[in-house]
Image (cartoon, rainbow, N blue to C red):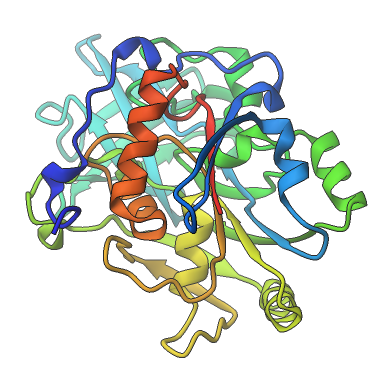
Length: 344
């Protein structure tokens, strides 16, 4: 049965299709419409999303903010070093990834700026580091002042002032993600207001996106893959909105795979969504029975990735891979700053 092995999720992607820059207009990207019932694939523009969402349906958005988590500095030798902040453990202590790993041992420091250095405290079981921020500033102020936008590894350029705004959704509120919930990057405030006027409902979740989102599945049996841990939160208001939507017979639209995983992580086997917060390692892949999601809006994902497997679990393996072949043939833009797909 296709879709059970990691190798089933390989596809050829010309590097020229990997979007390196955001479009000038957030809503100007293309939109592939994939209809599960008929297998039909349509090619539209993102602004058409307003024609596809009926009044009464519910959009679920991940409101996490992207942290300027990439700290660039030097070691005592003067050689360059990098610290990528992953998880705030309190009192200026973070779990982080560092480079070069072999040089940054406990007790050593990375000088980031005149008012920020990073001390390496210990090596964790998973080879990350515990680090301490040393600064006279508030920790959040120091990160904002000296940190860089943690652009994904497939964007092969340094971050710019433009990225500080564009690698962030217009509805981002708080949190400390090291990657954007990229399906939401296509929405402008004007488009969200238009949807609200048309009667489309909205609810929010949070999932703090970790660096593991870019980690390919290396084992050929996906069941052997160790899923990255990410923190999520579902508030009572979102539970109420989802419950009311389902009671009316309207549809729940998850904006991005992070919204999918948040909602599915907080839904029990009988399909009841409950307010919750905590960590999730939920790995959605075929076969998987979705309990609360009716529609998914997403971007185009990496080969052999957990995100592509999630899409295949929802749309079906064959239809998903056909959609990706069509996207390559029609030169859709891929990954974080790329085009969008909606699965109906």
